[in-house]
Length: 248
Ligand code: IPE
Ligand code: IPE
Ligand code: MG
Image 1 (cartoon, helix red, strand yellow):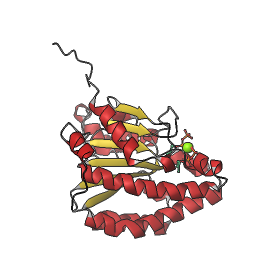
Image 2 (cartoon, rainbow, N blue to C red; image 1 turned 45 degrees about the vertical axis):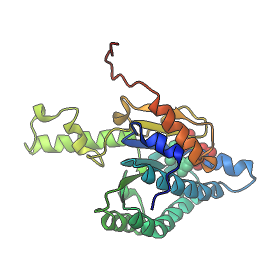
Image 3 (tube, helix red, strand yellow; image 1 turned 120 degrees about the horizontal axis):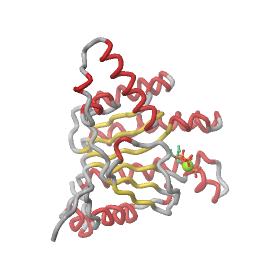
């Protein structure tokens, strides 16, 4: 089944990002503006994420990563954290059939050990069941922190050095990635943040050296496919130079 429109065809005819990363921000403010509890914003946010996942898959974007819960988010009120975790379990239960249907491979980056056992088990189960799907890889950043990822890599490297399983000269900008949560994940080509905030909030740090940014004023629960296409078009109009000079 194909749901692509003329607009989509125009997009697909040009170079699409291989990896789109999204900081889905603004759920709380969306709810507050509507006089609802913050969790109502998270619930709406899950629906929006579903739409964007499907759209990305249809467009043929190979990797989509969504920042769903940061290490720092543990500091939020207990009730909000607990409801978010419950939402995640519900999400994984509900969306497994969609992932199978759309051939989406699911992968979590972040400290899974931080989560209660039910969630950890669910994550492992969905990762395993979807591991052979190869239309798109959906990466969910959970209890993720860019700094923690780098620190964890350093510690793993030190272990290897101690065991003499690695030589210092073997540590390169590329081999360092082997110690990240998901070594095969390419650097994001495009990073989108919603809600008008102009910061990274500890999402990918090492990986964004040459990433293109798109900041949207929309709160995540209001984010639309149209706005997503706008971000992708904006990306397609940029000249990525990687420090070089292109003569003409
Ligand atoms: C993003 O929305 C979702 C999570 C961080 C879990 P927020 O909950 O940060 O919403 P705002 O930024 O307070 O509006
Ligand atoms: C970043 O949003 C984390 C996620 C979207 C999951 P935050 O709302 O936690 O970031 P700050 O606190 O505004 O920087
Ligand atoms: Mg926020």
